[in-house]
Length: 185
Image 1 (spheres, rainbow, N blue to C red):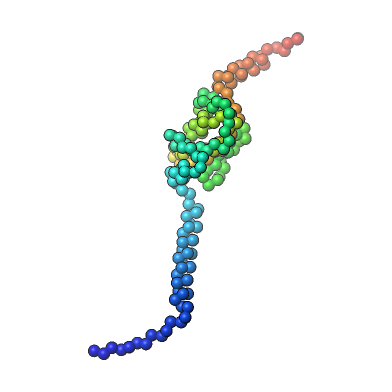
Image 2: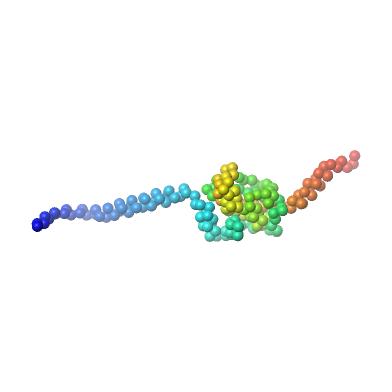
């Protein structure tokens, strides 16, 4: 048996370095493309809320509502039997604003459960950010521009609140005054 020797040509100086630099560039490019592809993907509500719970100042209630006090108010908090005068901006996690009102009256028990719970934590003049999980918002139902299973993000300012009974008394007094003839005739 005979062995034939095949002469190998020497590798040009720097070729191996160029090869490894090329391999590293391809790996970085692939990693960058994978990262960029993930940026457009919204996290699931559970993933977002789990991450958000660890952010500074965020409080998670037993029901799953998350809130952050942006500015503390003073005095008592409204109850479910009250009507609150609030300013708010509601958005989705991607920043899409679905509703906004600088000042509106709303019954505390007449809104989605997470918003009601958040209002009852606030004091007059307070500003809060609420993260309402789907089960405390609209759940599996889409509501206008709000897709099903959405986390709702609200910036809320509580201007004032009154009990429904006080509002009824004020309305009755105004009706009685309107029905009375003007004095002096």
